[in-house]
Length: 258
Image (cartoon, rainbow, N blue to C red):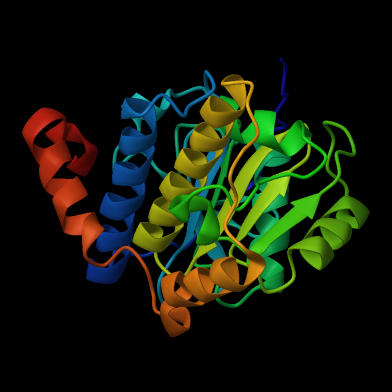
């Protein structure tokens, strides 16, 4: 797999990092480290991006060429919507990879954090014609709230972005056919917890199918009721789980805060 990055211009004038930006940097670096611990990374590819608070049109992303387990608050790169580096950075960014994120950030005001992975279970389920089945409670979180986008190749043009965001609509999560998973969260924590839930739902489905027997699925009325309960009126997810996940990282890999 090969993704080239082009040289980008650097926009001068970035000021000191605000407390809000620093908190976002710590949360975003944590999401990268947690993804690595879970084995969700794909060499140095795929990305998790987050908006910079109080700086419309500016985003944070991983330095290209770094493993997810090497990302820290200080080496995240600030860029604009076209991928130009804001201020100074010794690290390049993957413009091709950010293009997908940029399309979602631009189209969705609620997409503070966009997480896109090439995790095996998500790709495997995306290949199945029926996609994610309502086979588990984890999967029912996405019943009626999961989008699909057909594969269009490696390159990502503005027209591709328009089609992707049209398919995504107002949903928080997507299976990209033959490609991977995507979540959009109002916080870094929400994007991460949605992704964790989606990946587990895909893993459960694959393991159940491997048994070679007919799957027992809940009646549609039950699935809809459970999905509504799990949606919880659209409450922001991740608030309870995130502090525990940060404590876990603080015990085993605290350098994400550096």
